[in-house]
Every structure is written in structure tokens, then in C-alpha cells.
Length: 224
Image (cartoon, rainbow, N blue to C red):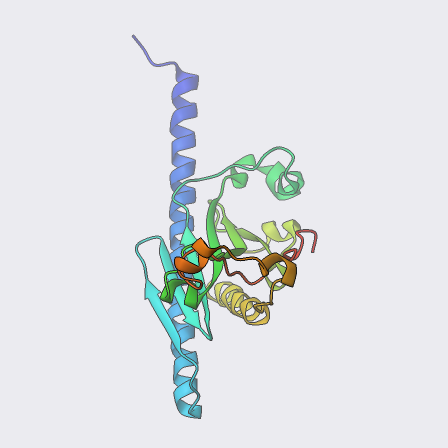
């Protein structure tokens, strides 16, 4: 029995490509980790210098996850361990950068989530968090972002945007800016006016009732 040469090349080449993408994404994620830790340290030092009471905390949560807490909010950064390809209909597949070399369309992804700090502190397991952005990184360490407002980015920048300490700092600062401006709003009265006895008995704040920054509201549509 002999290996089919075309099949062998397909398997080996695809494996090599995915390994390259994984390592590029892992390097980018570690840059996010170190940059975010340093930035939070600067915020903490500035708070001490000015005598402010805002707490800034950085917490490692494993090889592929870390979080920062500030002013009642948490930003959670998570790297997915798999490599993804975009569908043929995705806008990024139409870019000249991808058409020149389809291998560039294989990406790792780093998710950025926003949660209320109290949701974790008081174990309110039903509370909602929001993905405010995700960073796609390919084998050439080029990246683009799908995200809300400050984090949004055009797909056409994929060919020129490269992961560097400066670009990572800009992304983290934009995530903090968006989170700070993304306020907790009171849900519409009619959606919270009825509460069951069971909900009250299982703890109004902790177990059953859901808290989220846009609970009962339309969360900024993706066309923004």
C-alpha cells in the first residue's frame, strides 16, 4: 500500500497551515495579555497618584483566558483553540488580499466579552454578558476585527493591519472605552413588573432574575 500523493500533500499542507495560524494567534493573545496587564498597571498607578477609588484588577484564568475588572465592569479575553475558515459568502472572502492567497483566510479568533463585575461577585449565573468584539488573526499575523462602534473595523484593512504592541494597545483601549460608555439601563417597566413567589424565594438578586446592560432593549444592531 502506498499513500496517495495528492491526499498526502493536502493533509500535510492543511495541517502545517493550521499550526501556523494557531501559533500566530497564540503569539497575538500573549501580546494582548502582557499589554493589558501593563495598561491596567498604569491605570492603577494613576489612581494611587490622584487618590482615586477606582479599582483596576488583572486576573489570569489559564493559557487561553484572562480578565480585567474596572469601575464595575469586567472585560474577558478568550482565545479559541481551533482554526476557522470563513464561508464563501463572508465579505472578507471578496477582498483582493484573500483572492491572492486563499490560505490567508484561515484564522484563529480572540473573543472580547463584557460582563458586570457584580454578576461574578454575587454569583448571578443568569446574568448576561455581551461579545463586544472578536479579533481574527491569520498565519501572517494580519488581523481584522468584528465589533461594536469603537472596535469596528473594515474588512479591507485586513491586508495592511498587522498585530503589533501598538495595535494591540489600541484595541484594548477601544474595548475599555466602549465598555465605559456602554451603560447599564433600567429595563422597560412592563418586562419586570411581574415576579413569581418562586423567583423571590430563590433570591431576587442572585438566582432567577436576569441583569444585563441592555436587558429588554435592542442591543445596538450589527449594521452599526
